Image (cartoon, rainbow, N blue to C red; front, side, top):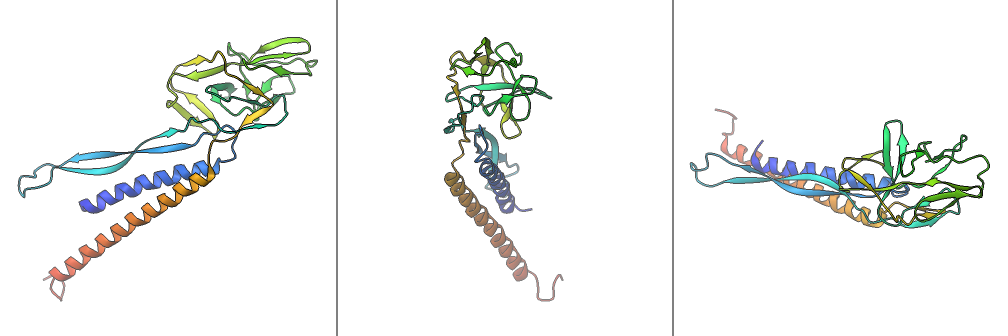
Length: 248
């Protein structure tokens, strides 16, 4: 493969990755607590050797999708009047205990399990400030949750929901649409400002994502046309250089 085609192919791979990320954002436009992703492009420099004869050259720069990162802007809060629905208007994550271990999430659609455990929509227990499940008694019917996460009922205090923040927000590995694995230490959030009876919607802006998708498509088509034009140019050169009868 010649250098021109290699350079164009590297751009196609990067654009395909950008298209996949944008499509995933659009697919999760209605996923509670979802945060959109972006692609960070960079250059991969290939330093050429033996450029003295013939003279010229030095480096060839390829396109590269270096990483993906998340938009940490909070989504819109929607009030549901469900006392078990919780939203975080600022930084921080709830912790739920999944079969694979504790996971962070901003999806606050919680509810009471038959055994009284406060859990997410998948049945994973919501953990308190010391990593224990929040347990409600059968007689706890009027539940109140304050901004600092304190849970109480008509029978008295129940516990305090733990809200944590990772040391490096970019070191969160997605697991599903709304859960994350923290790959950096986490610290408690003292004043999370929890809103009871509300959920945080996805921060995806569908119109913006559609605009990005169309731009990605146009760039992908442009590079594809470039590769096709380069292939035609090379074929024309071969046709002109070879004799009419083919290879001598």
